[in-house]
Length: 167
Image 1: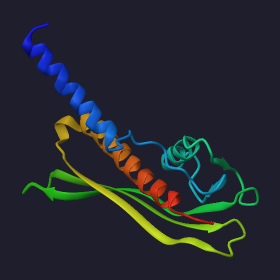
Image 2: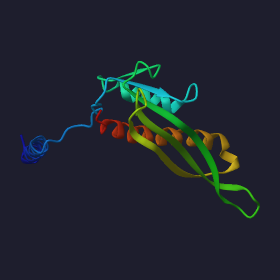
Image 3: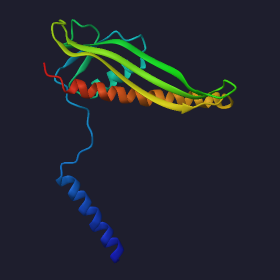
Image 4: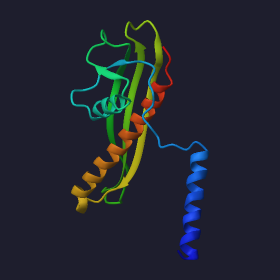
């Protein structure tokens, strides 16, 4: 073993020991303080709802049920919306920049709705993208990728709020 390999190996071992010693761990699905949740008010086939179901069931301890009667906690969606706004145009009135916005308004209550656990809350994520008519198909695919990224951000925010709940 030459000196360079030895130094590299020792440095890697030192970094691994330091990370293990400080308590570093990969991010895991949060532990939720309830076992059953109902997601109500979402549109049929809502991509945001599907992503929330996936994230909630990834915790392993909580499952999504169909009705509020079966649930301990109810997350009621008041608005699940995607918007595409024109941010900039040329002198010839051609679109050059778009703002994409994903918005979720929701509240969380107990199943009997006696206790509001999270009052009406609005989460929004926005991204800007350039636009040209000559690459419209590619820009449409780029917009879809940006919407998915924003949706993932919103789901992460909802999961952090749900993890902080105590019944």
